[in-house]
Length: 425
Ligand code: NAD
Image (cartoon, rainbow, N blue to C red):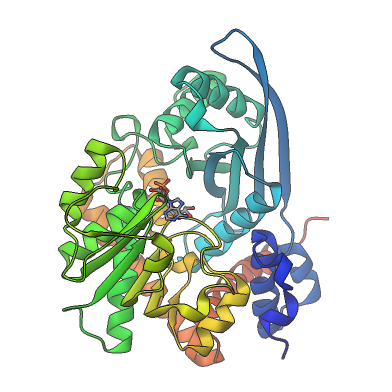
């Protein structure tokens, strides 16, 4: 059997599409997926590229490039975030779109996968420029999105305000308010309670289930979290509130370490007031890249892609890795982690709390009936625990690691549906 490293060369290691493909091919081969379905699932079904003008505050016109990639709609409308960043590539959006297909299938919710993005630097844009760019991008892709077609959500550098603008633009074109066209909206316009912290909550469920599976104690369980944004800060807070000891927070501009545990409530308050975690007195300043190789029971990468690579995987000293971020580990690093017998909860399972709560939001919008937060959290936990069990059972019965098991489970579910629907001639 070929190994992952034999299918990915080092210089391609950090290309997210190659990383996705390496895992897909490995899992598809293990599944004996038939050639035709292999072809269907290994490429996106639609890639939209738009170039559009925006009037900037200085009165000049700037051109922007945006993408929307739909990987699959076999199991339901496509679902996936929209990110704003200066270095977005089509390969990245492609990879993220297919990860969404696998993620939705792992948690068995009726969505396919999509992703979108606009190449821009939101830190250099005014609120008015961002609003005009968002509205124009929405109108450029309007034929391809909709509650039954493709439902966007927030991602890197987009938030509930962005979703409110998209919802409003779409609704203006449709001549009626259509709340279910996006998820991650403000609560007063069809957002779901519990959505904001759902990905962090899912990370906590994955930590709990890992400890249970490995027969480890929660008491004194040391956790290091990389990234203190939506996923990292909510995950760290929920973990602390549930008895874990957060000994490290690795942020973009520097890390924090305290072997006795960092008070996440105080740190959240500090970041809210200062806009950074730097200078927090409740922990020692430590370089972030040193932090992620510190000894701990659980490492939670919750910042960005490609942070665990062939360059640092050998140095990691965690027993468990729970991937809050999308694509934090390269395919080459997977093999090193497997040799070190590190238990990995892969991204498409570990961070699926967000899309699962998005599914609840879409359901509530379509019903016009909104759930209390306790129901969102309860149903979220039920789905995530069942999915964790499904993946672990698959890993044991097929003798593969958790990531390949998650891919196999997902590919199997999507392929089964395509087979049943048949190929439209
Ligand atoms: P965010 O922008 O709210 O937070 C990211 C944080 O990571 C920021 O605080 C940033 O400063 C920090 N960061 C950036 N580069 C870093 C680096 N090199 N080292 C350490 N810290 C760094 O984003 P988010 O919504 O929390 O998303 C984080 C990751 O989780 C992304 O990969 C995203 O795709 C994934 N994800 C998010 C959700 C969600 O619901 N928000 C759901 C699923 C997956």
